Image (cartoon, rainbow, N blue to C red; front, side, top):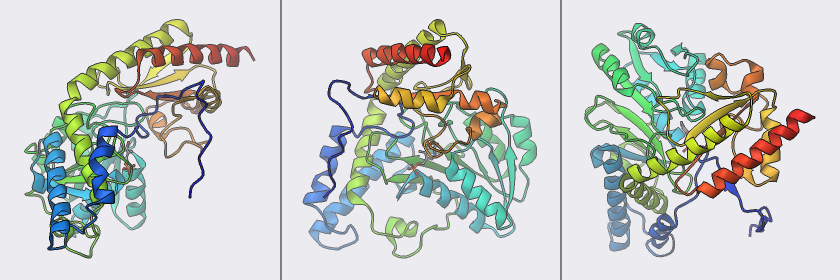
Length: 390
Ligand SMILES: *Cc1c(COP(=O)(O)O)cnc(C)c1O
């Protein structure tokens, strides 16, 4: 048995401002999934009742995920993560036509796309990396020029996990469509935070993940347009209509469906709430601390994310001081935190190493409160004053 981790002291409750790394699981989501752990354990591919119950639960979850994406249930393939969904889209696009072995993507993608393309580059796939401006935005003309008739895939994230910058998905879809190539978007950070319609838009593939949406970790989905050619990434059994082999993680998929249903119903309300928390937090820090700058695109930005550069501050050091005060935030993306590399996203935006290392990301959810954001801002202010005085 795992021991209890005596991590949190009750006197100093956790202020969790790292919701782009992962989110707290919604109790309603746990309640929905529990019967599929301790009662309906049947294999959804089995022909008898306890199997059929599991299979029916999968289809209800599929409808709920499709609803959030304004897609059709047949277009949803359940995966083990957002990362797997992205890998599946990229490998499928390359497998679909041996004469098309070129990918266009950006320098600010999540490592799910970035590392996959780096690995493919070593195997001879040609990758065109599109840079970004100081706001983290792409240039559409540069994008259009990069796409060729032998391009297998254009892959651009819907919203960036580090800065919250939202990309012009409609325009990018139009570019891909005009050149007759496939478009994939990593929509992991966008779903549940801004409206994400993918069905009937010209988008062929979109990746999403449960744990960024108040669902447990280890479940995701790939939207694959029903007219797009899809070559399975995992082969074996004929689960997911022969598109993703392996017995489905029924309980987690049920949870994911519930989380998507809630996200769909509460989108506008949650959007408003996180926006007001984020803006109050950001304004407070900007007005009270000197030498603070917002990294990213102030207009086209996720409502829950702020990435701040604190002049003459070592971000990792501040992060540790904040952790001692039970405030969780992030230096760079979760996947690179702990390493001393400055964020590839901020570097691509032209930030110096020093400025990238002086930057922290704070990301909110609807579970955060005004009191928490105010208290966090006060503590950050006092720690910065202290750090700058030494
Ligand atoms: C978290 C994240 C992923 C990876 O999703 P997992 O389910 O953790 O594999 C991919 N892209 C973005 C933008 C993310 O924030």
